[in-house]
Length: 270
Image 1 (tube, rainbow, N blue to C red):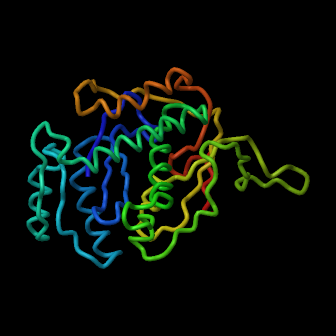
Image 2: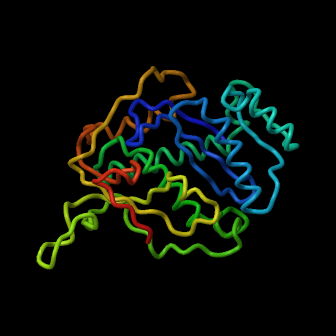
Image 3: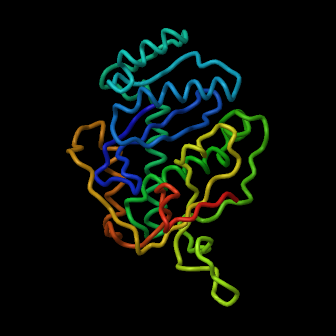
């Protein structure tokens, strides 16, 4: 597992960090988006309990770098209670944690291409990364096993018939107002993406994603506080470089990941 951030631009959900967790055998990946690094410890505890309950298996080893988000008293105490071994890479040697580093780079490059192709705001970088992770789990074959990560983990082939192009235009169905018999049910146009960073969609047995639709006129962006110039943060900073040349922070629209209480958002399961 590995954490990258903070990004120069906060996501539409006001997140600045991304935690990537990878199963060593199946290469199945999970991504979680955080406001601050200090959320990592509690998130890891919740994730391990969920994995052991849903998959009926035990987590044996945690492999990470020496970052304080992983190497702290909270995680150490939890692993000691659960009997989980800790493996740390050598300082300033990212090759020792190469699987997680390569996965980070792959997700960032795919997300950059998706945002540039869809011509939507950089604030949707978390949606692009979550979508890339969701699709790769179900489509890429694991070397030497000739099966997808999803099939190795769950023992069945994934259903991908419902997948749509990231950022494709949609009409938002108006279910909140009484329209009568003559008014049209579809409202403004929006853009489309699976809401894979929703907590419900990170459930281990989730088969279908939530789909979020948003009016592009209501999209706004916000700069993340603090510098991000260290060597460890260069992966996250590269995400914005190419996309910002084509898109301004307020340009275009896409999926809104705000809670469903937002009157401009309708969330559907397909």
